[in-house]
Image (cartoon, rainbow, N blue to C red; front, side):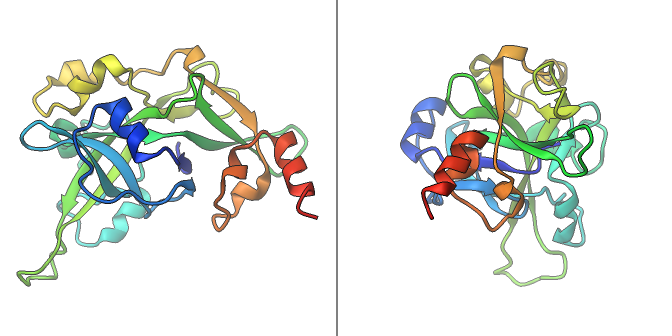
Length: 240
């Protein structure tokens, strides 16, 4: 499961890291508490095969959907069933993207406590993580006007947790190594080659630390949410 993440890297950093040739749309301000329905930054290929940065709504709406509200339930796609589920199989076959995240949040159960402790999971390198995604384009079937705009949406692929994440949650996003980015974004890549990319990341790719429960409130959105718990508490103390 991945229900919250951070996108705060600059457009210049993303362009350099992912080798994109242009920004299709203006990028938003840094978002330290991304929630479903929000516009998120993605890397994808154009029909001409050019790698670009774009913005899509998080929560995939299948082409056959009667209402975009279905996207609220489709923020993640399980890698084990993505090529079989009607909601995802078409996008998985030909519309894949990379969702760059500076890290993501999960909530860890604590023995003897009813509430869970939030943690922030990030790459050991400090660079944005290349999370595997799929995307779709949907048009409202009730709007027959020529001006009817398409809604483009995306979902994150998840897989079993590696040993680093397993104490926190039994699922984690699919993380793509740089050497497979071309294959993932190429609409013509064979299905068996894609399936091989959906394994858990090696244990040393990510690390995590506890963070403040301030992240629980979706209205909170600043860089302090990512700080280790001790540093976050000290930062809060300086405000008083």
